[in-house]
Image (cartoon, rainbow, N blue to C red; front, side):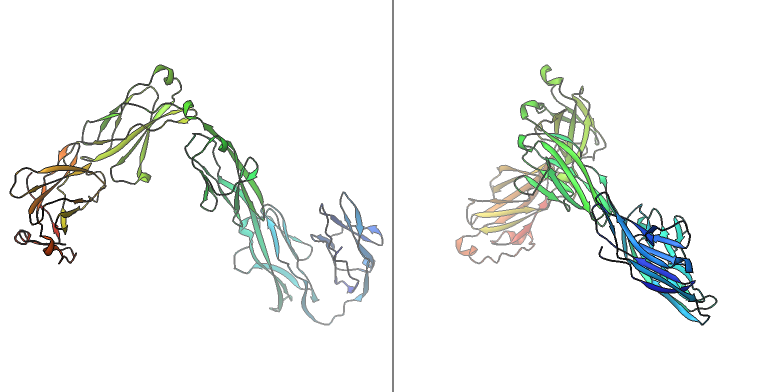
Length: 509
């Protein structure tokens, strides 16, 4: 025992309170004796509260005696020190202000448990005990009871019951009152909103497990691999406050049971998933012969070769991956295709737009390597002519830069060519992918005028050519380059302009 009951004297009709506290494993149950005999708790004047509290209201002469606390568990039974209750004569008729002998204590419990907030008061006349919430919200009536003369019991508590509770002892017929406050904190053990899912992945690939748990307070997440704590490093990455586990470059050593442990002060929960690692030879071969044909402004027709008979039985379907050229991988769309199909129409596409496409075959063990990636363009016209700029870097080099379309998929790429004026034949073209917007032409002849031509292209053809004349100076002239881009008229371009950006003009090819 670390708290023993204390002897006290009480006027007849008054209130007595004893308390004992003890630590034990398992937790001890508390009962009371008076004069070494079990206390008759069926008497409504006797109220037993958690934490070893005994209240006696409306004390009578027969209540006088020696009280002690009995603590029992499966291991032992212990008795507290004894405390004497003396009952004196009847309460004097003189006025006494309300006094709260014991008010509510701060209490932390879990949802669905029962909360008991103590409030015992004395005074003359006998005070009326009432309860309220400090935030003004209603306590409600469901699951609410009063124990004894003023203790508040809330059954099956929920998170909404958290708050500061006010016990008030009022003198009848007046506004005279005394108050005491206690905070009730309701916790919720972790519950999963998203569980990790078992997966089968090929060796060398990646696996992602997601685990989302809610609780009060916020749960802390820990991952285990076959029962041992998993730490970040090597091919293991934990993100989003440990809610996402990413395994990269997986091998047979990563095949295991992965457990997500969610913990807070209210409890623990766990969810598990299995990672199966399939060797490459166990997976389907990558689809071959992928081709795309535009059918309309919004539809592409895809076809690929039927796999060999010995591989067909293991395939359960295909997945097509598609995105506009220039779009981020995160914007990629996927379409599932049944296993017996070797052609597929992709619909609801944008007109005159280029798309990147590839295909994967799936078996119960996982996905194949991807097919080759192809670029296909829907019908609907060629790209707009690009706007480009030139900058003379030195007497033999010119840098060409152009603006990329703000809308993804409008070009498969660009073709840059150039010629010496007045020669008619262009050199090139130099073909550049859709994401490149600058190129440097070197080994040009000093003190020479060149014409640059740039076109954008897609599967429907080339845009009109954008052309620009550039005049190269000699070594002495280029030593004066200031490096700042400006726009100049064609008249100025017939003179050496080292270090100057010049915008293009569109002309027919």
